[in-house]
Amino acid sequence: MTQATELTAAPLIKGTGPDLFEMFLEPTCPFSVRAFNKIDALLDAAGEDKISVKITLISQPWHMFSGVVTRAVLAAATLPDGAQAAFKVMQAVADHREKFEFEDHCRGPNMDTTPREILHRLESYSGVALADAFDVPQLQKVIKRHTKYARQNGIHISPTFMINGIAYPEIGSGEPVEDWAKRIFQEA
Image (cartoon, rainbow, N blue to C red; front, side):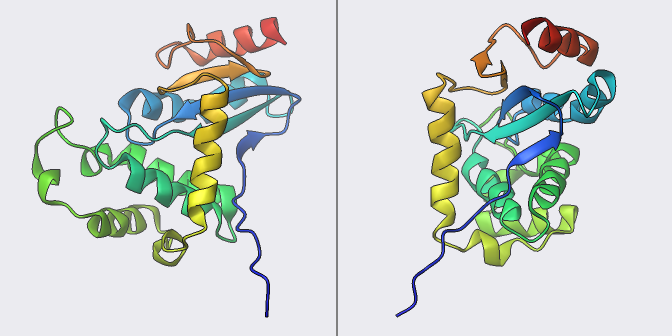
């Protein structure tokens, strides 16, 4: 009898610095997309060797495909390209958000879209083959770890930001990255 190995997902981290800026994001949320699209600029402004940016995903039920998209991103993180594959999937959602969200959270052309179609769209836009990884039942543990970590830190909505383990609900996705960088170094 062989023992099943634990499914591992690469941490969703960019940068190598000692100060940690954590983003709790829901991939289809417009404010999370705005924050996600600022990661590279933040690393440029603050220095990739000075900060690390870590993403924790939190599904939100008012974004109707949230669970499917979140699972797909984390499925990508289990692939050989790990975090890079997950970032490609998140960028695909960011670049084509209307294909993964309902109008006013309740109507529009996505009313007739199935989860399988969402998965195919994600594969098409990102270039990442997700179907097999998406279908692994153990992936639920990865999803639950992300959710549990957010809740243990009192975070229930996206985007929410933490600096070195402390949540700062007043930080917003609309702020310039220079303000984020300044705040990170003030709080470090």
